[in-house]
Image 1 (cartoon, rainbow, N blue to C red):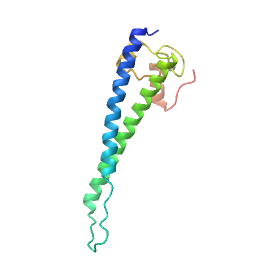
Image 2: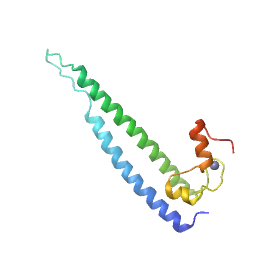
Image 3: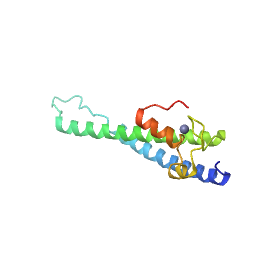
Length: 129
Ligand SMILES: [Zn+2]
């Protein structure tokens, strides 16, 4: 059972993580939207530079994949915050067993116990409780 004090601390950590993630995501989105390919309309010059485009595309893909990772972390944090609100924080979302305070300290956004989490990472799905 996670104590009220510990819950307050986890909530504070989750909220500051959330703020940090939000900032990073905003920065990335801005970078992505400023990268829109500019077309030189009204000129006859051919302005296609395959090498530059490839680099730009690569940068864009990289930003998008970072953005996806941040988005996933953000979803985990939101789920953990929802569990704090619902009073189910510290219990595995899959099997209902306690997640363990050590694990929560290492990762306050954990919503599954270590057994369910490792099963999920190994097989891509959650074990049947
Ligand atoms: Zn579990």
